[in-house]
Length: 133
Image (tube, rainbow, N blue to C red; front, side, top):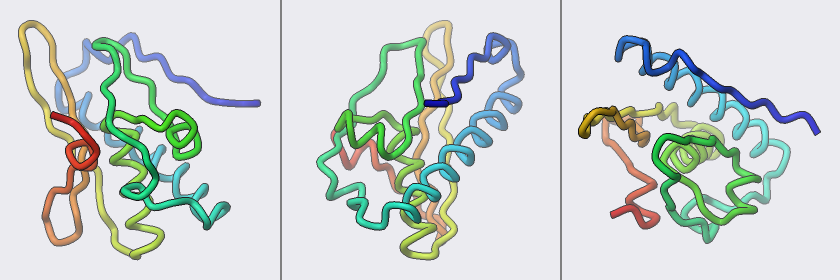
């Protein structure tokens, strides 16, 4: 089975705006993958009814998972959940929601959190809804 994997050694050396541009593009790629899955498998449960919960990954690592992988694991972190929710909104609600990136600096590193920017400007955070503290 072909399954793309990205490793970005240069990511930490990018200017913050460059990092955010890359993360936004990666989110859009995962959203497109999830959209195609929702079209192919219309019986996919809604995110909030799927039994999936938020679990963070180990710091320094960030594997991105599509809907079937997240369902198989029954856990996801912020980009897994946000990109599923965005695909769901675009496909089932015909709402053009967007990824919402939040940046935080802690000690000597930068953390990113992905949520959902709804069409009306509200920010929805599937991670918080599914167990993030």
